[in-house]
Length: 342
Image (cartoon, rainbow, N blue to C red; front, side, top):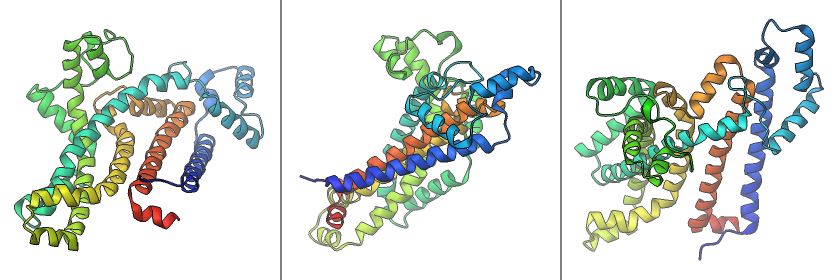
């Protein structure tokens, strides 16, 4: 049984907590140095000076900076991110409504990118310098080179406006909005749970294009790294021995190479998933997707620092947590890492 020592787990957890504390410090500083006026955003530019001063005191901005930081951490510890200027709701409530849409989009994107990128990388490495390999490298290069927003606009013009193969902006058509009661927050799952198959297919038609476009950049990275890992393994003695014994290329890849690169792939997929959650910002703007990305953009437009800082913390924490899980999985699955930790 593969084991991870308590000391090693504690060390990795300590790294996560230190990284999180640094993130909190950075977001606090950003919230104080940016040329925005949170008080003015709440009370308005023409507010009475007395009302302005009262709001400033209510927000604790009249206190010394170290006390502001303590109140900031105390509020975060209790899940209090402040009140959003845009909606007037607690920021935590707004994020709870927006995050499932981003999670649904990013999850579908990482599933697509994994099921396309890993096999493509394996085949490209197996048939190195063949036409398949050259096509795979071109696909990966294009995915790294062309901005997501350009793909999004072109995709809408061709597949929505031109061919009408997919749904338009938003999660569903307007006349379907509000018909599904949120349970998990994931519209595809909630619509199936409630037997709303028509809404499910409509939602699937809306999510498939942004998910594919968001997945393309991740797929390019996964393909390139899978190809690199596989080529490294194909030059190892055990693969040469397997080929000498007459083992077919398919069995060699699936039975020998893939298990040996699985640990590395876990790290790559975790990084890609975190990157998709961050990269969803641009995609959500193009497709009017009501997730954290669009929420952050709207908050930036009016200088709503509470919303901006809270969304940054949430996305940053998710990215760090995914890397932490990948790091732990790496240590558990790779015997060399366990031996080095002893």
